Length: 89
Image (cartoon, rainbow, N blue to C red; front, side):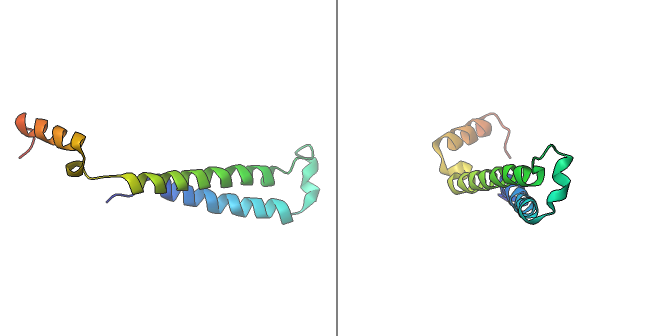
């Protein structure tokens, strides 16, 4: 299975960040006094949203360029050395 861990992490942070951002935009503004007037939900939602999108894009880029060991020259050399050393069946 060739699932890059950045894909589900990116999706999770994107969804949670989007929800938190929307809540920060439309939520009750009376709680801002406790956080010195800073809309914490909005700002952390944006941070999580940006992080999630970056992770998802990096994960997509990584899976698109991934190659099997037998397809790359470096991988073939490693496989050859492992075979010579008796590490393979």
